[in-house]
Image 1 (cartoon, rainbow, N blue to C red):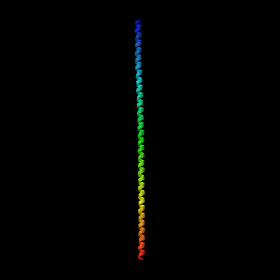
Image 2 (cartoon, helix red, strand yellow; image 1 turned 180 degrees about the horizontal axis):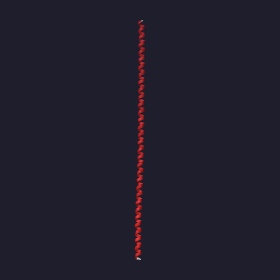
Image 3 (cartoon, helix red, strand yellow; image 1 turned 180 degrees about the vertical axis):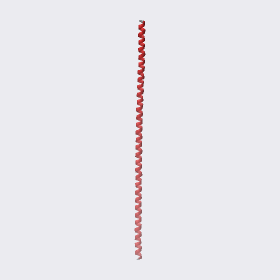
Image 4 (cartoon, one colour; image 1 turned 90 degrees about the vertical axis):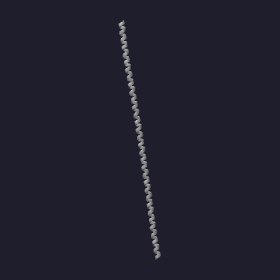
Length: 116
């Protein structure tokens, strides 16, 4: 009976050891799974951050492009205004010259009539 008891005890201890090893393996697997999940979450967060940064950069580029376009349009308008002013000044100068020429011609006609 004692031998049987020892044998059963040994078998029970062996079962406990096996159960402990199995428990440790299962715990290790769970920890590895948790680590993998955490790593995946971190990667997803990093990807989201990168996407947000890219979107912000694109928005900034678009804003810069819009500002450049506005500046170009303003410059074009300024050039147009300058050209218009120059054209008006030239017209005024031409009109003044024509008036002076007319006055000179009238003066010559009057002086010619006076001589006669």
